[in-house]
Structures are given as structure tokens and as C-alpha cells.
Image (cartoon, rainbow, N blue to C red; front, side, top):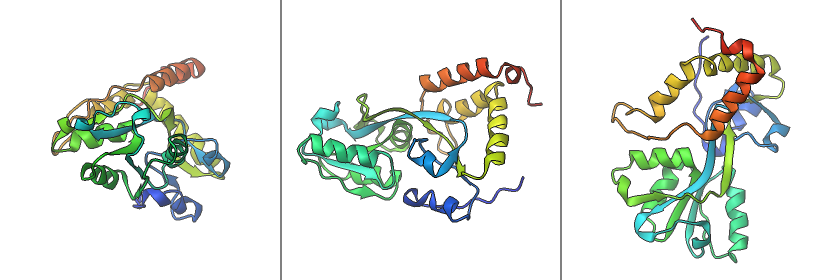
Amino acid sequence: MEIHWIKVSPAAHFQSLLTYKSDVECSNITNTSDRRKFILFFNALFYASTAFISHKEDHLGSIKMLSGHTIFVTSGDIAVETVAKLNVRLGYSLFTPLSQSAVSGFEEMKVTNNSVFVADDVLLYSLKAASEKTGCYNISQDNLIAAQPFALALLRQSITLQKAVNNAMMEMFFTNEFDKIYNKWFLSPVPPDNILINMPMPARLKQEIAKWNVQYPSLAHKKLF
């Protein structure tokens, strides 16, 4: 199958689908009930929680300590609404500028005093690992949003494509192919800079794979090659 990649901004990552410029949206998209009203999703391929990264010297370990701080969040992210609600809870004491991407949000946080960047924990681990001063930043254990499923998105009328891709994904889950891919990107140094994210497979994803193993026992023993 020939693949044509189309680069889009996070704020407009559904637009190429809805305008029929692409068939599948492949990025860190959270499968939510609101989004399922206008698009389809494939099976979950990852689970991520929404946390925040901050300057280590600020000692910001919990959400309740964020009052009076600048909170960067990426435009179009599900965390935007959560941060808005948090601002209400904290008496509108937050300054909440929107960033165009996770990279720019992290960079803006790095040069701004008393600030944090809110995003999916897997993105925060990646950004921290790629930073020149990894020891200068902390990722919160206090989550703004609990573990949510990441999945590829497609148009609602693309049911045949959805079924075909889901079947292929199941085969990858029930062989060692998915584990190889995960270990390559999250538990091994990634070329060319040999950056090590060192993020174990999320517990929720392990639970989902185990559940699918019970629901689709015939696939569990199917070989890819």
C-alpha cells in the first residue's frame, strides 16, 4: 500500500479528515465520546494520562500548587477544557496561553518563570528526554486527566477500513510484533541522538491487550509470517 503523509498542525488535525484530504489521522489523538460523534477510531494503541512538567527548582508536585502560575497548553488538546475548569477552581488565578505544538509549549515553559506545560505524560517524557538539561525538569505524578486511550482516527463512513486495520492491529498485539515496536521507541535509545525515553508500557494498555486475548482467542495464536 502506497502511503502519502500530510503534515498538519495539532489545532487542525481533524480538518484534513473532514475535508477528505486524508483517510487516517495518525497522531496522539485521544478517543473521547465527543469526538466519536463525528469521527471513527481504530482500536486503542496507547494509553496516556495528562500531567504537567515544570522547573525542578519550583517544587511543583501537585495540581493545588499551581495557583498564580502560567499554564501552557497546546491548542486543540483535550487538556484545554480541563485547564479552563482548573482556572475556575483556583479563582481565575492562572494565566493560560495556548501553544501551537507540544514542542513550542515546552520551549515556552522553559524560558518562563513560575510556569508549567500541560500535556499527555508520554509527550512530557519524550520532551524531557530530548532536552539538554533533563535533570532541570519534573513531571508531576498528580494527573489532570486519568489514563485515556490514544487511537488513529478516520471518517465515520470508513467502516470497511476500520475493520481491516483493527484486524491487523490485533495480529500485532497477539504476536511479539507490537512489543518489538514499543521496546524500540520507549525502552531503547532512539537514533540518531540515542535518546532514551524509558517509559514502561502503560498498565491500562497491558490490561486491554489481556482482555482482547480473551475476546479473540483465535487471533492470539495467529502468526504474522
